[in-house]
Image 1 (cartoon, rainbow, N blue to C red):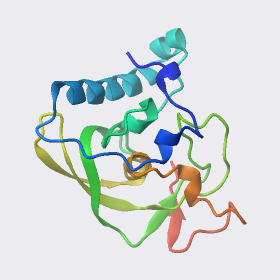
Image 2 (cartoon, rainbow, N blue to C red):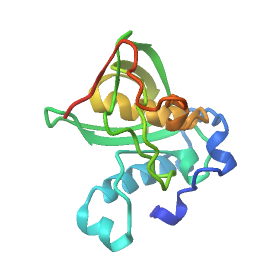
Image 3 (tube, rainbow, N blue to C red):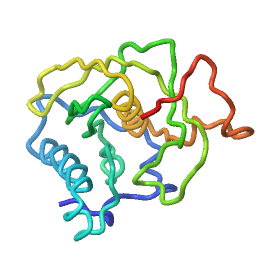
Image 4 (tube, rainbow, N blue to C red):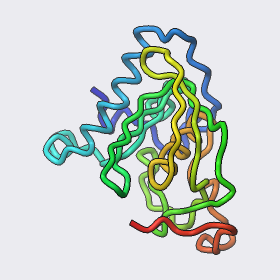
Length: 184
């Protein structure tokens, strides 16, 4: 089981590396790692388990965050309509996106970043992602709203990009061109 001790923190060199493709079909070891990423996210959202193991709640986790420089991510959250979006993905890639952008008015957080970094993080409002599921089958996923933001955040991790890289350093709360805030 992954705990907060296993999650590497901001400044660790693995977080800035472009992660390697996972060879397909995925090995048992890679499947195990991907399943453990999802297990952590689901446990972090369960109040009792989170309290017992001192887990910070999260909605996504990428393999580089546990010091495994491979292209695998897990995302688990509900959208505004209460629909569950739960994805364990190998080699995810954004293949198309909207022109329109969005951002979270309160900014983004990250399990690898201990402090709050204020500012707007511009993201595409809608994305289509191509990836491979736990069995190595190709999947195509269309997302909007918070699930789209979460998957972009995790794909950034496998590309060595941190969320705060997107924040305007001069003016963190500058209005984002062609964007509307995602309001819950």
